[in-house]
Image (cartoon, rainbow, N blue to C red; front, side):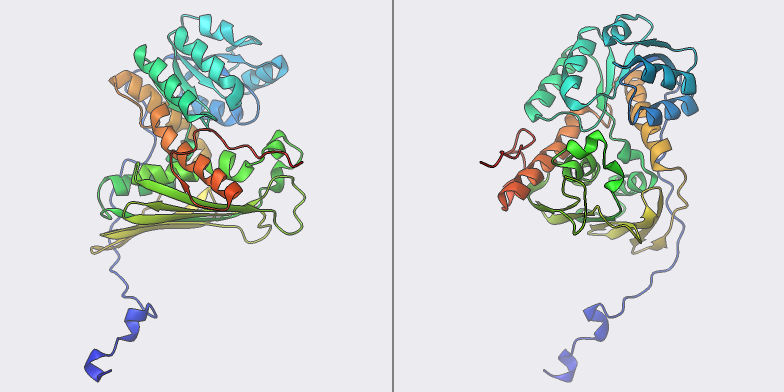
Amino acid sequence: MSKAAEIAPDAYALATPKGETVAAPELPYRPRDPRGYRPGIGLIGAGGIAFAHLDAYRRAGYRVLAICDQMLEKAVCRRDEFFPDAAVTLDFREVLARQDIEVVDITTPPEPRVAIIEAAIARGKHILSQKPFVRDLDVGERLAALAEARGLRLAVNHNGRWAPHFAYMREAVRAGLIGEVIGVHAGLRWDHSFAKGTPFEDMDDLILYDFGIHWFDFVTTLIGNRAVSVFATRAHAASQTMRPPLLAQALVAFSGGQASLVFDGYTRYGALDTTYVAGTAGSLSSAGPNLGEQSVTLSTAAGVAIPALQGTWFKDGFHGAMAELLCAIEEGREPANSARSSLMGLALCFAAIASAMAGAPVPVGSVRRVPVAQPQA
């Protein structure tokens, strides 16, 4: 090789030019409340994560008029803590029968949730469904069609969409700041064994389904329906005592790009969460010790920008999911977190679970239901 043809050391990524620091673009990543619409809201399902819903609604000044749970003491506890004037009931039908309740937030598990959503649609209620939305894509499409036929808004509580770092990245992509997305890569290293001894331990796919749906959904908010196939694996970490696997990873092939999601759910020390989005005209990255503390960097030809993000996942996430639904109702449009939009992330998730079972890539959309492992003979 001649001296003229020698490759400079910088070309090997041994060193990269440092861009000039520039002001971060102002983007609409925070939750946006409706201008004047403040309907009566009914919460159906007062266990588990319901505290985050109610805390967010109280902070936003929303009107929760009724709280329902099959265990009345749970409904009473949530009422007393967050909305002392709300009614409590064991029967969700009593919530749906109230004329002063226009919106219902359904936080129950997926299986009983389908019948409740159907009943809510029949009663003319707008709905926020807990995630994951459904365990069957055909059921999800049917519910979306039922709501559309009645002129109702059916949204899904993909609260991760309003986590400040995810929201800023999404809005930067939507604004065209990094060009066309060619790579999405997330690495999560944390300890999920806090769920030991809870109903979550009964889930075969705790990481890929219940937890990982946030990241499958995030990928689709950036690439839309470009995903082609998924290759995934899952495994038990050495010395873990929880029943479901706490290690999982998924490689997503999409038109003109690729994505990778790595879940190290048994990282007991030195937790670290990172996200990187590569585009044809720039990149976005975030990093932090947990999902509530993340610093985002935007790199383009103009320079390097580090926005001073405000908010946290739980406060903004649960506020944002309901706020987007209320804005959509007020403005007469589909919510960004519509039921139909959630089905793209679920299709990725279902394909990933099927791939982990089969040990081979699976086309996105070919798996219509959550795969269930067959009992061994």
